[in-house]
Amino acid sequence: MAQAIPFLIAGMTALTASQQLKAGKAQASGLARQAAFRKVQARGEALKYRQQGAAVMDNILATKAAINARAAAGGIDPFSGSAKALSLYAEKKGANELYISRDGEQIAFGTGEAQAMQYMSQAKSAISASRAQALGTIMQGAMMGMSLGGAPAGAGGSTGLQAGQSATVSRAGFRGYGG
Image (cartoon, rainbow, N blue to C red):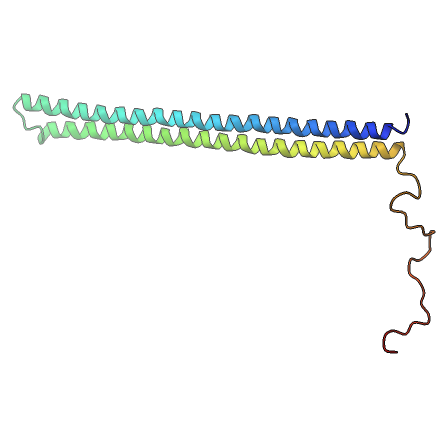
């Protein structure tokens, strides 16, 4: 039974290390899914701002059309004087809203992309951490196995030499080739 203990330790160590790697991969997979979802959310938010920009453009056109129609109905040239000034004012205000909407679109998309990159970075860190944990578990198991007793003396890797004995053989009479 005592001889089986090192094998049990090795088996449990391998199982634990394997589970640590699986846990790290599962965590990384979850973080990668969060990153993908965040990208989709960012695109959705950006589309909302784009729709808002389209609505602003529609509002500008409707406002200009109303100004021109009222001016023409009153017998005033809609493309000159105060009617034109009102039209230009509506364009200016609308353009400002449109630019704000486009900025919001870019900010929403950029923020989502940055958060997705953070999730992916966390996923890579989770994989690295699980590998380090697994390696630590393996090393701990090896140390435990060695503390219970390593390989018997003279087995595997032994040269058969005594301490201080040289592995080279003295060849006093050898003078080299050609001589």
